[in-house]
Image 1 (cartoon, helix red, strand yellow):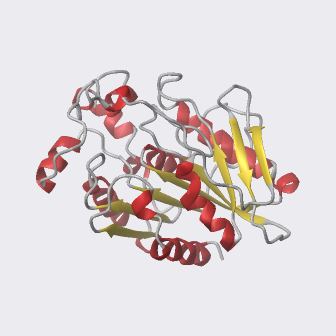
Image 2 (tube, helix red, strand yellow):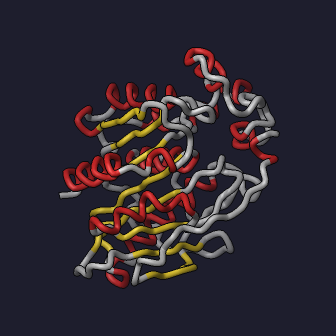
Image 3 (cartoon, helix red, strand yellow):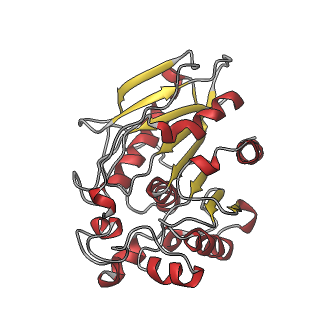
Length: 295
């Protein structure tokens, strides 16, 4: 079965222990342009913000799903977590989703006083395709690329203070070759074809046939010392997105960014998805890293 033929079932995040929540807040006009907000149970005057971008190959997904759980854990460290929806690839072509994420950032910064957000401490965190959105959004914002007129706060800054990217795809024409190097049988046989989840991003075209878009949609194209601090996480047993996607991006980041801003963890035997990354060690790693860069 192809990735895009899977039966998607929404599984909600467990937010029963969070006292203060907002749901379906509009960040711009449109049915897919709402977000949910979750606060720490310990009140403060202002809160640093984690904008969590869910994955699903840009083909499936919904805000406040179970994939939000790893970010929600950071409410215990004092972070507000914002979970936005965005247009899926069959609803709007790429890079619409980048424009939407920048509209979310501008909305968060513009609404800082009303919602007690700290506008200087906004973090993007994404998993799988959401990781790609997070890194590409931050990278292009840092060099004033991929700007759009989405949303109501067009003069507001759309840069962020840090990025956490978990098992994301970044160089879309190299999946098959990387799986071969790793000796891993990829989960989806259509990988690299027009019918793959990568192919949907390129308007049902095989990644190898659109080299100019491969470069345009690769976050590394926009890496400079202006890029905010970047944490990369990936699992060595991933059969959906090869770990080499993250490892190669780390090398490119070290070469093009301020090297001290780049950190990574490759989790032995971890598979694709949030389950193998929901550990106390990874939570502490994120918390300490964020505390250092957002101090």
